[in-house]
Image 1 (cartoon, rainbow, N blue to C red):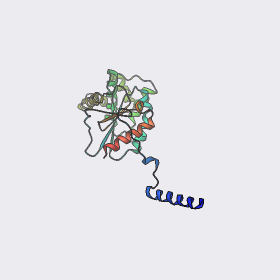
Image 2: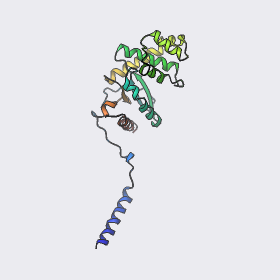
Image 3: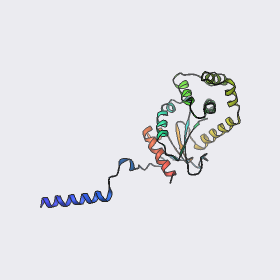
Image 4: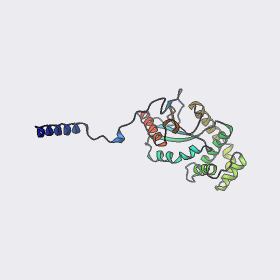
Length: 217
C-alpha cells in the first residue's frame, strides 16, 4: 500500500512539474506599490525621447554625498539597461548653490559630450573627495583649465543658448517632479522613486526595472 501511494504521489508531482515547468526566481517579478516604493507624478513631465523609448532620469546634486555614493548603482543600471531605455542626468536646482552646480554639470557636458574624458566623475571627485569649492565662474574656469580645456571654451559654454535651454529643462524637471531632496529617479516623466523610498540601492534597481517594464508594454 505504501509503495503504491508513493508511486502515485511521484506520478502526480511529475505531472505537475511537466505542466508548470521550473520558474526562475528572476522571473517572479515583485509587485511594487504606488505610494510606497514610488509615487505617480501628476501631471507627468514631458519627456525628450522618441516614441517607443522610455526615459529614465537621475535628479542629482554634486554636493550630495548620497548622489556620489549612488554612482556605482547608476553604472550598474547603465550596463544592464534595456535597449529601449534612454538615460539622462538632470541636476537639481533647489537653491542658488545647487543651480550653480547645475551649470557646472552642463558646462562639463558641453565640453565632454560623449563622456570620453570622464568629466562628470572628475567633478564629483573634486567636490566630494577633494572638497574643492567650485561656486563661481573663476573657480569653474580654473577647474576646467586643469582638465585641459580653455578659458574661452568655458566662457562660451556658460553664455550659450544651449546652457539657457538646459537650465530651463532642469528647472522644469525639478519643479514638476515635486522632489524636495536627491538622489531621485524619474521614470518616463510619470513615476518618482529614490533609495530612501525603497530602502536600498539594490531594491532601487528592481523598482526602476519594474517601472520601465510597465512603460514598455
